[in-house]
Image (cartoon, rainbow, N blue to C red; front, side, top):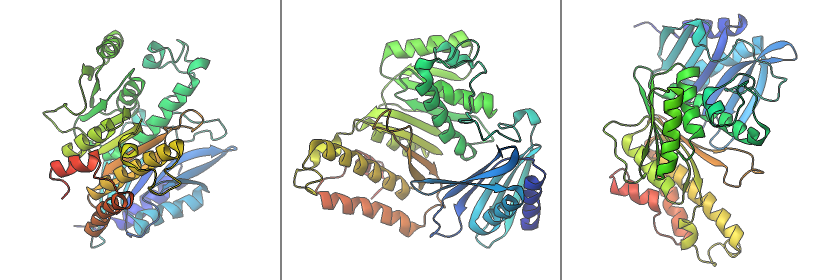
Length: 400
C-alpha cells in the first residue's frame, strides 16, 4: 500500500499557493506533551491581501495568527506531517482526509465535492466586525419566524445579542463538524431546548450550510414551548426536526445520538445530559451549565477558607470546580474536552461551554487514569462525596 505523505505535502502547498483552500483542520497531536490539541485554518482578506488564519486551541484557550500564503504553505505542511496525526482539508473541488499510522505511514482519501457545497468563499473580508456563519443582510427563515431578523434580513436591535450568541454557538459546532458521521444521517438531541433558537440554528448549519443529512430532536419539559416550536417547524416546512416533551434523565433512544446539546440545564441536569451522551458514545457533546448548587451544598465554610467563606466567592468557586471535574471525567472516558467562553461575561456570568469530542486516541491510558485520579484528589481536598456525573459513570460501569 503506497505512502501518501509526499502527495499530502504537495496538495497542501498547492492549495495555499493557488488560493483554493476553503478550510483545514489538524487534530490528534503526535506528542502527548503538545500544547495545542487542534488547529483550524481558514482564508481571510486583510486590507486587500489574501492570508490564512490559524486558530490553535489548547484545553482552555484559542490563539490566532495570520500568515501570508507562502508562510502558510510551510505551516500547513509542518502541521500535517510533523505535529498532528490527522488532517482534514477542503479545496474548491474536493475534500481530503489524511491519517498517519503509529508506524508513520500516511493514508489519504479524497472525496470530490460540488462547488455549491462550499461553506466559505475563497477570500473572506477581515476588516468587517465579524464574519458570521449566518450573515446579516440575507433573510434566514427561522430567524425571521422567531422575530430576530426582519423579512429583509436586518437583525432587530433588540435581538442583536441573541444573533451574536447564535452565531457564536454555531462556530463551536462548525469547528467539530468533521467529527460527526459523513456516511450516514447525523442524529442530534438538544436537551432542555427551551425556545429553541439554537436548535433551529443547529439544523440550519448542518443542513443548509454544511449540506449534511441530519435528524434533530428538541426535548423540553414544558408542553407550551414544545407546541410553539412544533408550529414553527410546520409553518416553515422543516424536515427531520421535531420537538417532544420529556426529561433528560428519563429519555431513551433506540439509536445512539451523535451530538448531544445541553444549554443552561439547571444544576445536575447538565450531568444527566453528559452521562447520557457518554452512554451513547456520542461523537460530540456541547454543554453550557447553569445554576450549579450540588457542590456548593457540600462545601463547608472552612474548606479552602476564605475562598468558601463568602457567598458569592463560594458560589463561583463551586461552579468552576464542578465544571473542571466534568471536563476531567470526560477526558477520563475518552473525550478530547475544552472549557471555552461561550458569550461575553457582560451578558451573563454563566458563560462557560464544555465541548467534548470522542477520541479514544487522544489520551493514553495513564493520562485517562490520571484525569480520574485528579477528580478524586480534588474531592478529598474539599472533603466531598462523588458528585452526580461521577456517580452516573460508576453506575453505568464506565468508571471504576
